[in-house]
Image 1: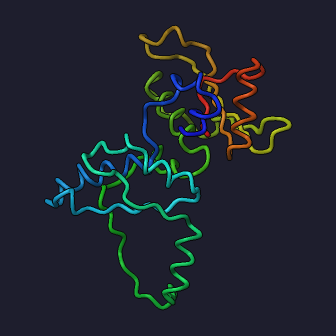
Image 2: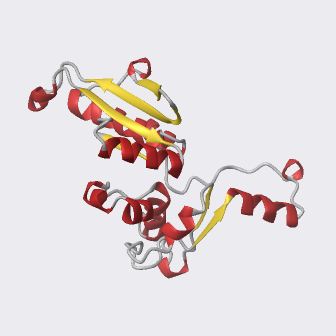
Length: 205
């Protein structure tokens, strides 16, 4: 959000209204989970471990309080967590086995891939395809290609055939999305869009 606000403010109206997975989890932890577990939301502390320092700024944005509290209290980078583990002298090989605390229940296949780069776009394409056609998309039909000349940008496309009657107007259409890894590639793809050199329905950064 900060990147678009500062560099491409004309595109602010095109941003997805969905929160990031980090912020979605924060809201759910302090609403759904707190109610389910019978815990006062004020006593729930959410800690996110992320590879990008930008997530720290995202968690601190004033609008990220949908739960009535700060949705994500603390954000650690993976490097910071690794340093903490080393400083604490933890040896994972010597720790006893334990079961996973599955606090939110099972996830869908589309949801599981959210954490990977491009996972949001892939899960979106799968969900939209099923919504439009009433059928799951076979994995081999999801076309993923690197963009020529741009190592950190990938394209995905899915062809729509035999849609449900209410989506007849999408017959034969290709839904096209792009994934830009890192802000340098994001800047490239945004410039391509501004100059009319690219045409996508959605872009994930």
